[in-house]
Structures are given as structure tokens and as C-alpha cells.
Image (cartoon, rainbow, N blue to C red; front, side, top):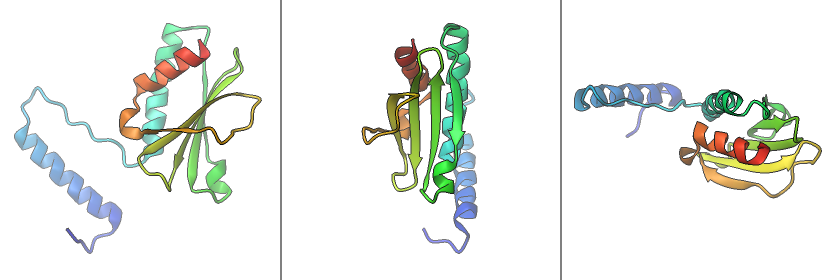
Length: 141
């Protein structure tokens, strides 16, 4: 389907159409879940939820979550997030790279290490607050 609308406006029109269709077809017992268009916001929301849960479950972990825009400022088309545990000096580095849409790159390192080449990749659709919670619990625990 072609449109003379700008990309974001076209997406909004399609999104609204999908919402209207879903509301007509779904029963009242169903939920409509729409992911944010901004994967960084989606990831930040998941990290916030996982952070709150890890703090309430494991008081000794107390991770520090930071969104880093330095890569983008340096001309690299990517956003980064770090989740640090100061007690264990361990870090989970998460990268959303524009050239790999729909993927989350991640690496488990220490705070003192430089990020290396050993990034793993997972589909963003397979990542949830539960995923981040489990990573923190297992790596920082």
C-alpha cells in the first residue's frame, strides 16, 4: 500500500485502523498491546519494570540503569543502555543498532572492562521485563 503521507503519519493511520479493527473483533476479556514505535523507550520501560522487581526481590543487587546517547552523538547509529551492579562490579550492556532493527545486542562484562566484540543478539520481540529481570538475577546475584 502506497501513501503520500510521511512515514510517521502513515504509521499512525495504520495503527489507528488496526486498533479500530481489533476493538470490533475482540471480546471485552482481551487486551490490545501496542509496542512503542521507539525501541529505546520500549527497552527503557522494560528495564524500569525489571529494576523495580529486582529491588523488591533482591535488596543486595540494587542495579543502576543508564541510557547512553554517546554513540549517536559520535555518529554511530545506535543507542546503548547499561545495567550495572556496583556490589559485584558487573555490567550488562544493551545496544539497539539502527542497522539491525528489531534486534537487541547484549553483552555481559565487568564495569572495568571495555565493550568487546562478543555481543550476542536476540529478537526484541523475545525480550521482556522478565528477560531483563532474569539476566540481572543470574548475573548480579
